[in-house]
Image (tube, rainbow over all chains, first blue to last red; front, top):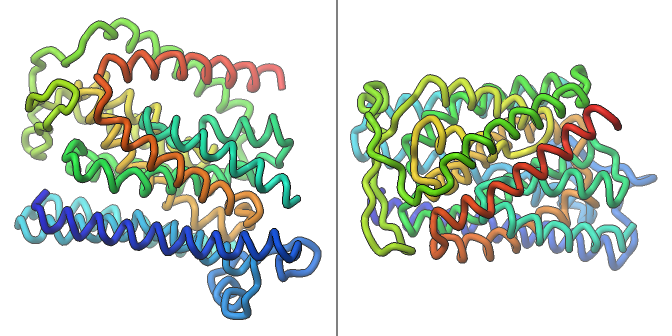
Length: 116
Length: 277
């Protein structure tokens, strides 16, 4: 891996992980302190839009789920950066391979919506 | 419930350290701990376990990248298989009884630990014939071994078998919420003849994507509970960053010695659960 890509990747991952962990921590702390998740009878949001709404309304569970969603996206970010790396190296075979993986991931997120 | 979240946090930190050191996702330690020790519903445990796998992968990736041990090409190539498998596994989630898979999984782990046991004396893999597909796919590599202070070059010996194993690992990941790290490291170690440290680092690299492929499905099915997955995410992140710092300084042989008893133990636990529980 070239030095800049490596650094960018490291930085992106670090920002992604720290951000998501902070948001989860904030949500978790407010849940522990208030003893209340912000949702009726121990339910929690499961759909991305629901989660965003919950986070914006400062509901502890909304925050935790938002942070978790971001965490789920960090491997995707990492793959996108690998894609950039392969494009830089003009490695056509692996540009293809990486695109296949990304496509599969996108499909998995769409499938998630479909099953609910 | 609040106290339970703290307990979960503690368990997750340990799982994170162990998982990161051995190239396994916390899943193998975490799911049994959550279900057996805390009596948590297995579906929620699996959802949280998927989160822990992503946390381990991303958390430790930061340290591994700097050390240039990960073979990105091997990882990306195999990820095509794992992510496909993961979707399949996650979708099947409701249908196949976990009992059946647990037993098969355990048996396969035992077999692979037997294979690894036979190779335990090797510090560096012997000169192996490179597989033509691997050469074509440009997978051979080299890395600087901190423990030995030398640059090790290596060739990749097989391609189709590990890919098949990866699809299987992906299915199991989607179904059981494990990282499939044991499979991945084993496939790379035994079939492709990669040095164990490279296998572990590359496995960590791959696990995040595999888990992400099924996580979306679990999230929307309501199997990710913030009270469980939240502390798991934090604990495992903390644990895996610690683990990744220690890892480059260990020798391949040390890793293998640590790895083997873990696999055997887990294998026995799983068979027992599949047959008796």
